[in-house]
Image (cartoon, rainbow, N blue to C red; front, side, top):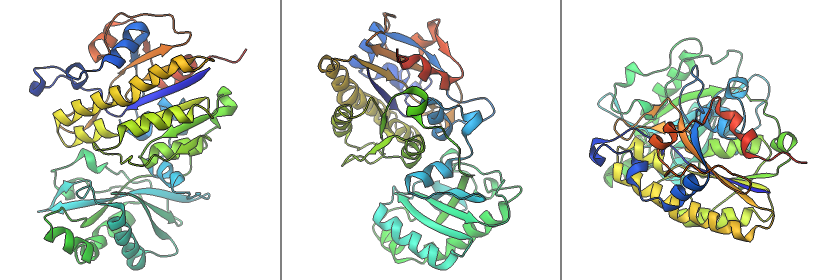
Length: 398
């Protein structure tokens, strides 16, 4: 048996007045997702336990079959894993965003989707000026980077994801509690350094948002995840432009597939992801295709971009993979699900169950309904906790 999991990140939503009180999933033209739901199993899955914050770091733990209440230690360690940074006991990894602050408010959590080449120059400057035997900065992708702390004090601070507080006063969203002084000091010292850097002078001259501050959050120690193949007897691969998703894949022993043109943004090469997923199935038993575009569109409040992103996932990824089932003699089973809800109205991640559709070899259920939040909620199928869905998806070896 071959398996494919398709994750349109943050695609689930609530009705929008800009879409005549429809959700983006309801407004989007998705004939392939609709066929998967109609001919297969349609239901709800809750990937975010109540006591953890809604977001991809927690939700993707569940999607990959790992109990986040048992394994989740923070987002930083997952991103560090993708960068090849092995955390030793006592080391902490911290997510380090490059952000834009204006008039005392967080104006842009992506610093205008700064390029990785520009960001690397800024991270080098941060390392030179703020780095120490205890602190090191590591370049990731675009605005997403990692800080490693090796010191005596635990970083058990309360931190806030910057994408949840766009437009709010910075002073109201800063780290607090034990370990916060270190994070605050680095964030505050980064202002003068970054604002004076030539990269930001050029960006301002070009009318782009400057990366004039770092935002530290999502800190944690190394998680102790079990190898996926040892648990399920299945060799996996992951396709994603997002470091944390790739990091989870590395930590559970999956192959990480690099796709040219995959950006983690709305202009990503959807078709290339579909082609590379089909290719990965020739050497692996399972491939997970993660697409960040619907989530990014939600954070920007761009409802039409969210609808278009969902449609492109359907036409360029879901459709080709479902068609590929005819060429898989062992049988192909497909699972489609967002990891969490993201509101296109306020740009924030939300709690709640999301719709899933399971289709293909051995899936005998037929809902007869299209793939929407409302039809999934009307079904009598709900998986909670969400990490247990993997046990239903993968057929046990005889």
